[in-house]
Length: 111
Image (cartoon, rainbow, N blue to C red; front, side, top):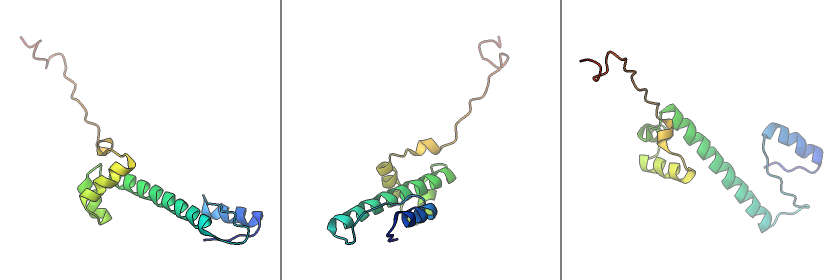
């Protein structure tokens, strides 16, 4: 956590942190401020979890067993995370290509 006292300090810290949560406290912290930190933390963790899961699913083409092995969790937990974040493993499967059938290979035209 970075504590700043001026707007210029807040802008400077934001430039190297990327996104930041700003909680104006007027000099003291109380339960309301702490709940804001909890919400910001939950949001940051959920975002990281989703991005990490998406990268592993892309890497292993939707194979939950391999994702689970790489992440050190069970395949059941991977499926639960996918459900929580609304991710379908079929989106990561390679697209099947159909063979083109020429006119001479068509069973209707052979006779």
